[in-house]
Length: 489
Image (cartoon, rainbow, N blue to C red; front, top):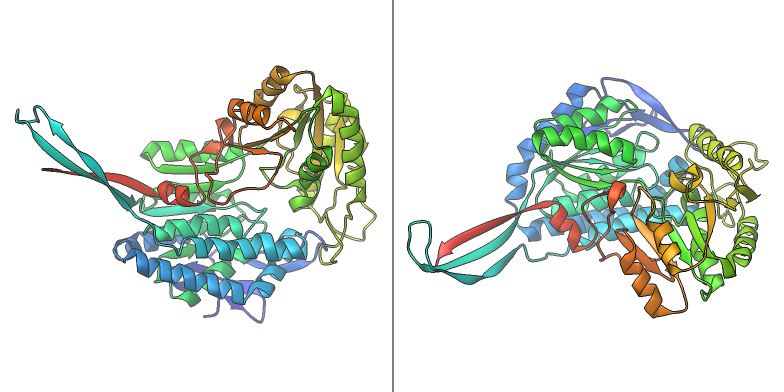
C-alpha cells in the first residue's frame, strides 16, 4: 500500500520494507505558524516497535556483508532523490516545524542531502598496527606479532531524533550508521515525524533492502522506550533533552548497549573588550533567529566584559528589534514560531522567572499581534547573574541572557560554571588570547569569532551535554566497534 492514504492524509509506519497501518491509530500534526493540520501521523504499538527492531536484526547480517562501495552507492542515490524533491520536502518541513522557507530548504533538507552524499564516500575501515616483538608470549615463547585494527558495525541502531530539524538530524544518524553496515530503527520526534517518513520514502526509492531502515512514531513515551529496551537493539543514538538522555542511559546500562547522546546546551559566548562587536552581535543574534532559538548550540548565555557590556546590550537589543517575526512562508520573515503552544508557554514562564530573579527584559518576550501561531518575540535579558535559572537552564527559545565579567579569569570561570558543555564561543581581537581561552573551556566545541561550524570537525558535548562524538569521519567511529586481529609474524 502507499505510505500515505491519499484520501485521508494518514501516514503509515515503515517496518521491514512494508508500509503498514498503526495499531494505535493516528494523531494530528499541527503547523506551529497557522495552528492548522499538516497531516496525521501513525501511533505505533509496542508490538510494532519490537517488530521493527526484529526486522532490523534480520536484515543486519546480509546488509553488514555488503561491500562499502554498495552501501555508498545507495546513500548517493538517496541523496539524489532528496535533492530532486527538495522543494516539496522543504514545504513539509516548514509546515511541521515553523522554520522559514529558506531554512527548511537550505539547513534542513539541503543539509540532509549533503549528509547522505558525504557518507557515500568510502573510507578505510582497517589499519595495520606496527609489529611488536614479544619477549615471552602466553606460551612462554618469544616472537613477532602482527596486528590489524578493523572497524566493524555495531548492529541494530535505534535512532531517536529531535524536533528542531527533522531532516538534518535523522540524516546525520542514518547515513553514517548505514555506511558502516548497521541497520536502523528510527523513532522521530512526535511533533514533526512526517518528514522522516519522506526520508524513508527516498531511501526506499534508492533501493534500500527490506528491514535495513525502519520508521516507527508515536506521541507516547512507550514507543521510544520499547525501541531502547528491545533485545534486538545494540546501540541507541539520541538527540534531545538531558533528562530523557539520562533515562535512556539507565536502560542501556542494563545490557551494556552502546550510546551516542547529543543532549542540552547553554552555550557561553565570551565577549572581550577588544572584540569586533558587530561580529559578536551577528553571531549571538542567531539565537533570536535560527530555529527561533530552538537549537542546542545557540550562544544563549553571553558573558560581556564590562568595558563593552553596555554597548553590547544596546546593540543586541537593536538587532532583536529589527528582526521580522511572522509567517515563515513570507520571504522577509526571519523569526518563525516555536514548535507548540506548550513550548511557547514554557519560554514565557522563563521570562517571567527572569524578571522575578532580578533580570531586566530589555526587549521582546511578548506575543506578536498575529492571527495564529506560537510566536515569541526575541527577548534580551540584561543584568543577569550566573546563578539565575535563566542563566543555568536550557530555555530552547529566542532568549539571550547577558552577564558582566571583569577579567579573563572570571570570564572563563563563569563560562565553565554550568552543567552543560556543548559549544562555547569567544570573541576577541587578540587571537592568542582567544585560543588560550578556548582551550580552557569545558565544552565539546569552541567557536572563535564565529558561530559557524566545520562539518568534518567532531561534534558532541562535555558534562551533561552528551556522550560521544559524531560528524564527518568521527560518526563512522561512533557507529562502529573496533576489532583487533593479531597473528604471529
